[in-house]
Length: 426
Ligand code: HEM
Image 1: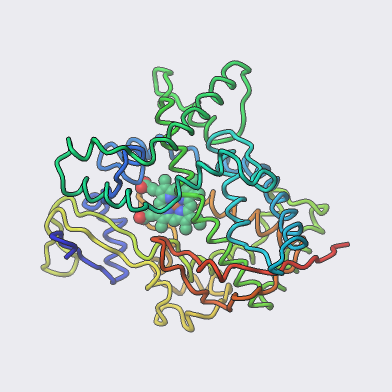
Image 2 (image 1 turned 180 degrees about the vertical axis):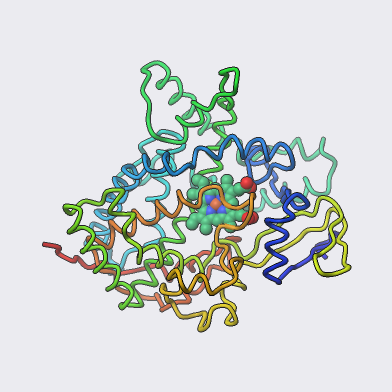
């Protein structure tokens, strides 16, 4: 039970697949745990028909053709990231670079550009209004935020509605930025390969825009929220794993050098696609550190668990483990050893298809899996083309200690420092 609500924790892999895929119609919804209207209209918090319609409208934004057009942007930002690492290394007194901070700048610049059409270059302009507003957006709720949440939970709406929303200023800032960008694009007829443009161009059958400007701001903020920390964490965990497992880093370097030699030294879409060992490094990183501890669904009508006579009532919260399955020794022998070869095709085939779910499962799974993986791959390819990573103070071989102050799986802040050493590629 969670307060007065029944919670069912399901560990059986077949049953998890039934709930998330086969019998999805009984489990379409998730809990809406937001305390601000700024979040309430975002895709992960919508329910039922409204969720289905919005998801269908947004999904084409992430098609492989569209992603391909975004790679040059990722690669430009990745070059800035790589330069930044070198500069940090020469100026820092700590003798090592805070990788979470560096990768956070990388994901922020990509999302700011893709979602809001802003060139933020947070590697050069460290304290812009954008970074200030973005930090406010990601800050954990303080005393006021917690007090307000309690009021919303326990007091009548008309009283809690009088309390100012701490996220209103952030929303207003991003609304102004988006409106200015839309006006500019309409006036100059300029287009870019980004989410903003795709959302602007999404039309219904009668040729009208599907997304109002307010809708666009909301979904763009969602991309920010969903994509900033998750991908920065993935990159930090991967970099720390490679720094502390030199054999794996050596293999990444060999693969990269060979691929660059075949592609005239350039990281093109084709070159990045050929980096199969790097794919496996990312897969193994997400196995050890999926961004969520568990997925959640709500049962929307009475459901009999397959193969049992147990019927769960509508309204039951269902939790489905991610990290515990990914680290289960019965599924992954020596689960705490970082071994990308677990993701060789033949090894994958040996496992239950539900044993690996870093992006969730079924129609409600992550919308941006390919976007996130391509973005992460571009960053690691550019960084490892130029640098060798070595452990800094506090960085341990996997498993890296986790931050206990966050709701998503994040590295403990003092364990994210690495030394970057030039590879002097000829
Ligand atoms: C390494 C990076 C990422 C990881 C590991 C990740 C993981 C996840 C997971 C586990 C879920 C819940 C799925 C479920 O309950 O079945 C989710 C949902 C979602 N993610 Fe991601 N995510 C990542 C990056 C992103 C990015 C970059 C975006 C957007 C630009 C994004 C957008 C979303 C959205 C919109 C949903 C909700 C889908 C829905 O309710 O229909 N994610 N993600």
